[in-house]
Length: 90
Image 1 (cartoon, rainbow, N blue to C red):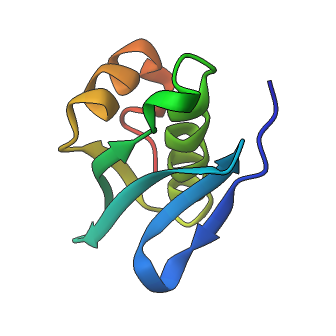
Image 2: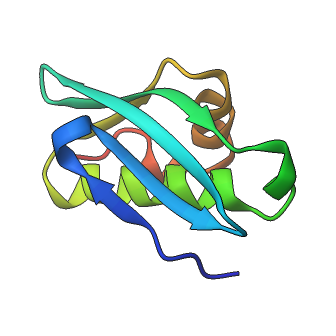
């Protein structure tokens, strides 16, 4: 499923709206890394692949900008394990 994802670089997050709800991934940049620190999807829109799409958008941005994808957020840690091609890039 495709989602319109917006990068809010001023607030260090990627977000999307669906059915009146906002889901987001927050990150921090440090030492050449993009670290996802928090993933939030409201209960009303869970189970639609939104969290995965947001994390992918953030890590695609990281790679496009020569940043190393990393994760503090538990969801993003699991996502990276499931998508090993993102590890060790940048």
